[in-house]
Length: 403
Image 1 (cartoon, rainbow, N blue to C red):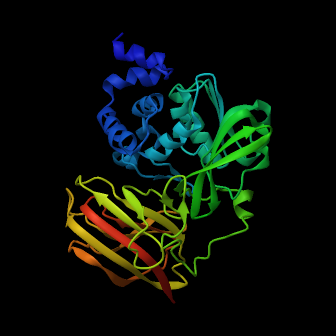
Image 2: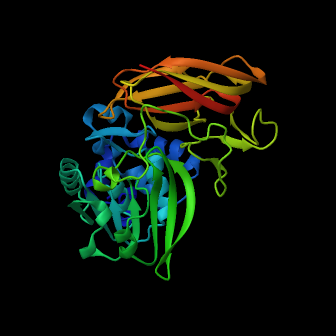
Image 3: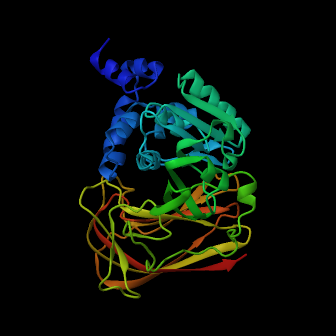
């Protein structure tokens, strides 16, 4: 047996997957994903990176989306759910600090990809999915691929898995408003839990560690997960209002101090919050990139009901310096709004920009975009988007024109 296969088997990866590597046409794409989207963005755990390099993500996405499997993006898996971007999977796994003898509970199986990544890193994975067709499909796939230490269940994940408790680690890949009590009870003393908490479109990863029966909290990165299906989602105290969409923390005054990131914005890449020289308030956000094609942007989700909103008007402050287009024509600074329908499928985009001309002094900008009637959600992407140079932004405001 080749030495690299022996090494992978020693890492605890399923034999079926290990033997497939010699004929895996996606191996190079997976290696590039690890180098460019994970290691270069701060994931350092060698065991986590190796698992991400081996687990065949393309088998966990729809066949028609396999060409996109190793891009750092979420992909639709049906039933209003997505497979998380590779960075999010690696980041959550690393924060969990998986150890070989750990028993891990995962809430929100989805495609089964997160469980597969954990499989080679821990002793056992117990994973729960509330959407029955997804639960059956992921269970069949995990079994077929040989992840024998992954145990699957269909049900309400927020109730946990009492019969298998307690757990050394818990990973929650859907977003409640607060930590469900059963998960606190089922976490071992000294155990760790990572969970995205917050309102439906503004969430923050939280790391909880159990000490003397109580959870000690650390706030981490802003993030955005699709809504959970089930009673907990329906009982949210704060629900989004698609008739009145708006940008949260558009002035970048609210900061996650431990991470130095702006509240409400996720996937912030190559950005800095600057405290001097803001056109309004006390700080602004600045993107810098010197490698063409490299990500330097941020995202924010919102509810937007196209049956009630005809147009969305945006205004903001901007300045820029030494802007150059990236490797592709699409890699230009600007603001892009991605629209999604009630099934959470993409239905088009609206682009503001490109901002290729240098703007050395702060300037107030504004533009209005039309909203598709079938839109129910949107994600705003703004930044250099693969271009090089420096781009500074502040004071985002929105208003709507009703239908």
